[in-house]
Length: 89
Image (cartoon, rainbow, N blue to C red):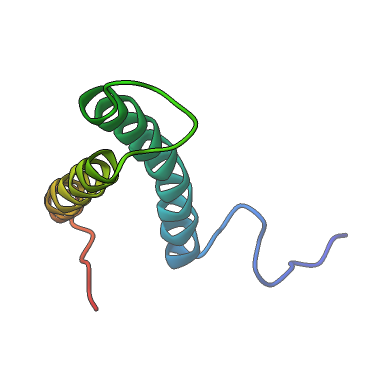
């Protein structure tokens, strides 16, 4: 006969599952954020591609990225709240 094992493989801790889920979302989200910012901000700010950015291009990129970061935090927080996942800090 087989004895029962503590911590059955099929029974994962709910917190561990949520942590793993959040980590996966973070990775996918970071990749999507990077791709979006790269595409949108470069299209908007870089008028003449070259080996380096002009000062105005650098400022435009910095402002564009900051806007996307702000918007992303607002949206992300709303989504997590809607899912019932608190963002306690």
